[in-house]
Amino acid sequence: MQTEDYPFLMDPKIDFAFKQIFAGKQKESKIVLISLLNAILDRKDQEAITDIIYLNPYTDKPYEDAKQSILDIKVKTAEEELIDIEIQIRNIDNYRKRSLYYWSTMYGEQIIEGEAYYELNPCIVINIMDFNLLDETDRYHSIFEIRERNLGFQLVSDLEIHYLELRKLAEEVDINNLTTLEEWLIFIRDAAKKEKRELIETIRKRNEVIDMAEKILARASADEMARAAYQQRRKWYLDKVSSEKYLLMKGREEGREEVAKAALRKEMPIEIISEITGLTIEDIKKLKEKMKG
Image 1 (spheres, rainbow, N blue to C red):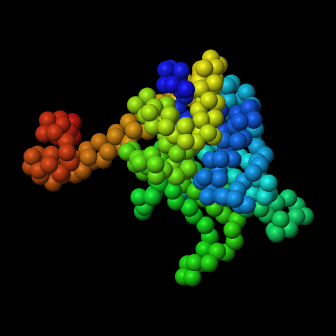
Image 2 (cartoon, one colour):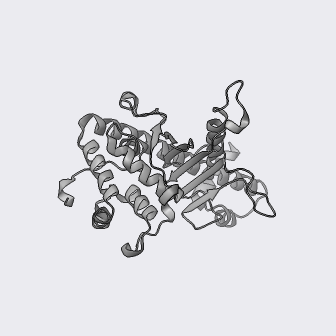
Image 3 (cartoon, one colour):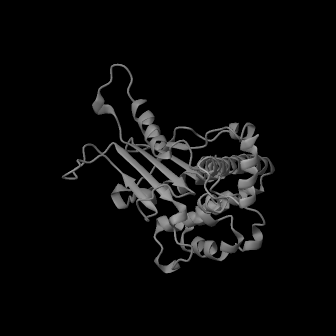
């Protein structure tokens, strides 16, 4: 289909749209989610996931309160693995510990009184993030497990946490050398960007399941009720991000003011204080007058 067929597409990075694609009511959602999971987990041939059960299936509830609903996706595979997949555009709540807590909750909830520990199944947490979390690496896909520190052997295979950092993906790509996972992540990152339509269309021609995913997204984007709920969710996210950035900026400003106050008390020259803090000379003079009052 041509670009003009899609005058508006929801952004898959907003979790409401993400869940529409990968956990919608239509049977195609299961197909596209299985494809995405196999790409992330590098499952091929006999190891590939072939079927899943949604543990928090799609309902109309997100339409009723699109701002506050938790829109992650939980599934169980045919091998009894539990998988939680979430997309986030905000780096909140100590995200590393947050994802470990999600894993521990999912793992611990399996045990009921009278059951043995060997009945615990592996749990996998997948985080797709529109921000950079791991400063220690430039890789866009990082995987964490439990391994012995010196020899590197695995304790158990029950813990697996994936971080996929969309901003670490290259903007300019060689379409002929993209992996399936990179195709999926580019679709998630760029599907709603008009300037990326040529790249997305090329990926759709190469990958019929991603083509299916965009058709699901297009149908949801054309639905008036879904679109209204999406806009509500998107506005809530943007307001939160804007508020957090303002508070961060305010905190930095107040921090500079405290440094400037300390320097003024020591009678340092205003020009030097300005150079140290980044505050203007005029701001420092006003601060000095305020301190006198």
